[in-house]
Image 1 (cartoon, one colour):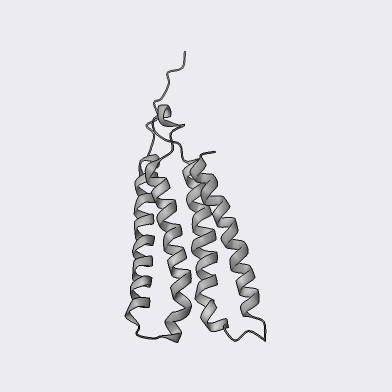
Image 2 (cartoon, rainbow, N blue to C red):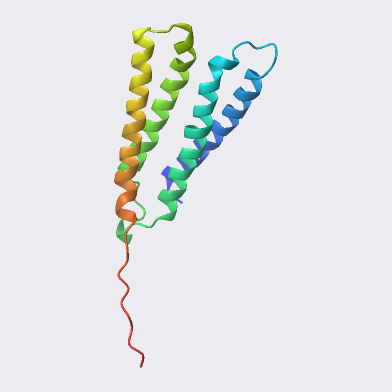
Amino acid sequence: MPKVTRLFIKSGLVYLFLGIAMALVAELPQVNTGALLLPVYWHMIVIGWVTQVIMGVSIWMFPRRKRSRENIESVPALFSFWTLNSGLILRFTAEPFILLFQGNSAIISVVVISSLLHIAAVLFYLTEIWPRVFMRKYVKRKKQ
């Protein structure tokens, strides 16, 4: 299993735990921040857990075209991991404040940068996975 796959899956599991823990805390009657935390824990679960596990497993399961590069870590996959997680961390820090400080340009710019990092992560992932998804040409063998 490639190192980048382990990074995706392990961080996805961390986000799953954090997202469920945050959802439970936000639903407590003593905590009045449920509406502020709702988008944060949904991002943790959907992008942090589901998306990262899908990306990691697909990088692992789809073979590379050239077997000689099998042991080399892929630069686009690593960039995808780091840009996705950087975007998530920015999103987690800014999103609770969107409702509190509506119209604040600093918070909006952090969310926009976070979204751009997510788009970059998807583009890096597509750069990595696209060549792996191809049709093999099957040659019919003659019966002897």
